[in-house]
Image 1 (cartoon, rainbow, N blue to C red):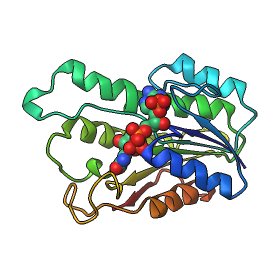
Image 2: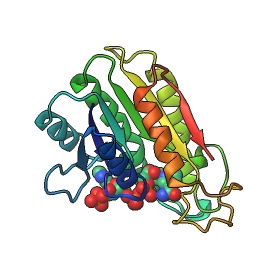
Image 3: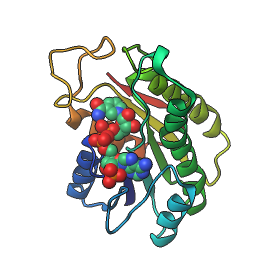
Amino acid sequence: MKILVIGATGTIGKSIHEYLKEKKHTVYAAHRSSTTYPVDISDKNSINALFSQLPQLDAVINASGTAVWKHLSDLNEEDYMIGINSKLLGQINIVHTAEKYLKNKGAIVLTTGILGDHYEKNTVALSMVNGALHSFVNAASNEISKNITLNIVAPGAIQGNFPKDKKFADHYPVAIDDVVKIYEKAIHTSETGKILKIY
Ligand SMILES: NC(=O)c1ccc[n+]([C@@H]2O[C@H](COP(=O)([O-])OP(=O)(O)OC[C@H]3O[C@@H](n4cnc5c(N)ncnc54)[C@H](OP(=O)(O)O)[C@@H]3O)[C@@H](O)[C@H]2O)c1
């Protein structure tokens, strides 16, 4: 398969990239500071420029996007807008662009996380974005064309980033190898509109 991985040098994206390459897929590794496939998901023109230079893809996985970590009492509108423009609208714009460029029956896989469902201190802005993406995919997966599947992987905290024996959002961290297998499942499944939770 020809697969685009956005955020391909990050904790999650790097492991996805390496795993899919081992499985003999053709993987295009994109992120902001890439010299080969630069992209900033908070800029829809940049997303369009990336897809337009690639051959027609079977799948795109996004493992990038940020939001501000602050207590509710410290969050202002600008803080919220960072998450909205990056992790929320960035992934929504990936869906709109990918719909145009992917093959029939292609797969789009987005990333949210445990904070869509579970509370952790100082993560209000991330929880908001994750919840919005879950609702977006629930609805948009019914209307996307070309029989493209649209799913989300929602991991818990990744072991290594967080100590294995310390809970995050009331759950123990998860192993990256297990998380990567969920992304693999998401590019092959015929199911759509699913939030694939691993925590
Ligand atoms: N790590 C965890 O424990 C965890 C758990 C659950 C969910 N998540 C979610 O998973 C996603 C990835 O997390 P991560 O920890 O793997 O991130 P990370 O280690 O910070 O890596 C982020 C990756 O995305 C790229 N990137 C950042 N901003 C970008 C942008 N605007 N446009 C395009 N590429 C961009 C980075 O490269 P450049 O800097 O070169 O762009 C890098 O390749 C995030 O949405 C995070 O909330 C993470």
